[in-house]
Amino acid sequence: MDKLRDFLKSWPGRILLILCLSPLALLGVESYFGGSVDPNQIAQVGEASVGLSEYQNAVNSRRSEILEQLDDASLLNEDVLHQQVLKGLVDRTLLEQQAGKLGMTVSDDTINRLLRQEQVFLDANGEFSNDQFSNFLRQRGMNKEQLFAEFRNQLSLDQLNASIVGTAIYPMQAVSQLIGLQLEARNLWVHRFNWQDYQAKVKLTQADIKSYYDANKGDLKSAAMVDLAYIQLDPATIKIDEVTEEEIEQQYEAYKQSSAVVDEREISQILVTGDKSKARADQIKMRLDKGEAFAAVAKKDSDDPSGADGGAIGRFNPAVFGNDADAVTNALQGLSVGDISAPIKTSFGYQIFTVTQDNGTQVPTIESMRSELSAKAKEYKRQTVYADKVTAINDMAADGLSIADIAQQEAVALKRIKDYRKNNNTSVLSQPVVIKQAFDEFTIQDQAVTSGIGVGTGTIWAQPSNYRPTQTLSLKAAMPQITQTLLKQKASALALKDAQSIAAGIKSASDINKQAVNFQSLGQTNRQTTLLSEKERSLAFSQQAPANGVVALTSVTETGATVIVGDRIETEQQAQLSEVEQAQTARIIRDNLGQDQLQDYLDYLRLVYKVEVNESNMAGAQGR
Image (tube, rainbow, N blue to C red; front, side, top):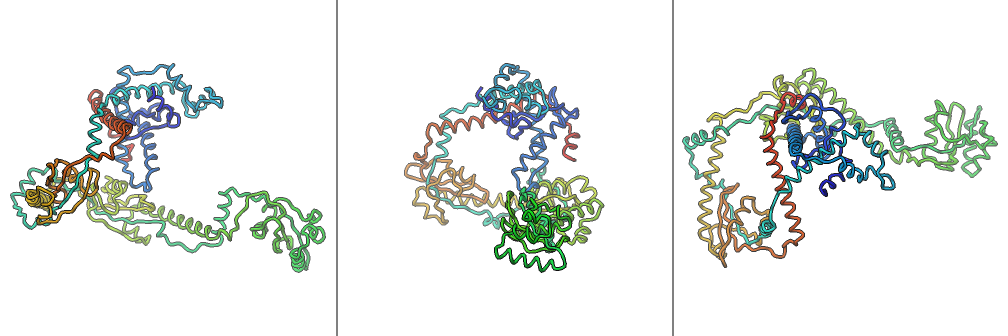
């Protein structure tokens, strides 16, 4: 029941979809609570089925999870995503049927008891709230019966999972032995013989090549390839004109709106009209600058009725000033309480303003933000031009223009990759999304330009040509590959002979320096060292040395042949794990074994329940 409680703790927040690719995680709640299963099937699993809508929802949810962890969406392999999601749904359906067959179920009383303990359904007093429970169901478009049915199904799967995974046994003695292996260490000396140094001594005959070809013909296949022409567009490379003052002001307004900046300044004014209004306004400003009170001057010299109230006109509202709104706004720009503007000409005459009170957010001046606003305006302009170019190129591709014509028209460099591979692609365009579109059946057939493909921060368009499908190589075509393979094999064998000859002359540590080759001393080394390759690490600890002696070991390796000399293997006592740490290690090992057992059980269920995948619907769901 603890296992069920652990699950329940995270269940409410994840009820819409839990789908991971690990077999153990297949037991999460799925997202089909709220609606009926689509009659279109992706797969028939025994007497049950996986619906098309269920499958598409699972794919979309898993894709979103993965993309949150990727900086570049083009790295997502859609084919693998679809395959793994389908496998997860089929595995779950297999387990559901088996749980039902075995009679694994949970009573309504048990579900009621567990739900009443869930924090999401408790009120402020810690009591179960029917209102919160009802809101939960309403938000998810389901009723109590649907929730209970799915929850019962989930708990049944947990029971089945526990019955499989819980049988994994790995005794503590075996755990201790495994830990002991990881703590083994010895002094090591190593010398490597590079196979390239022996290739001149290798003699290959046509008979050798023909024999290898006949024995391995099924594996000697050409890679599917096209010749790829492409153009690439990146926002950083887009040239734009310098930003204008208007564009900077637009960014400033956008900043104020996004920051929820509200102008709550109370203002007062002095209005001067008549033939000599300019001179009068200047004289008034001089008096104010010398310290005369604004309200007193307004009462005496303002030609506006507001003068009787000291010029007060309330909270600043640009709409009040009509066509003069911009001029007044600029005059008030950056004014704080007590500051007085210069006289400005408006349709009413000459006006002088002051801020008497400010209850709003302090707005940075446009000048204080000019550098930041200019950068934002430039980036916005760049992205706008970029988006227009992407749209224009997509339109040209849809109209059937060649990639060369598009490159010329848009003044973009045309690049080419010869022998662009479908598998084992190491080119600059090795992203799965690019490969998928480059080898799309219709694109190849029409030799069309793909639509824009997002790669990193930019977009590419590609046009494949000269498609060569995978096929068995002829002896002539396979000869370079066979020659290289046999050359390395035979050269490595010669290198191994020299390594064995050296090893035969080493019986003690003093013999190491007597050899015709130089050994590298690695010092005290354990199985986790990165100074040796995986194959060399296995070799280094494969045999114990005699007392007061050393052992010399040899093997063919990835680079040719290696001779490793080691003294006695000892266990690093100081690094021994505590009993608690050993128990934790045992638990991890058993969980891993349980996961393997679960996968074995799923393989067994595939023999019991017939699984048929609707390839046509699968292709449609994948956009093929």
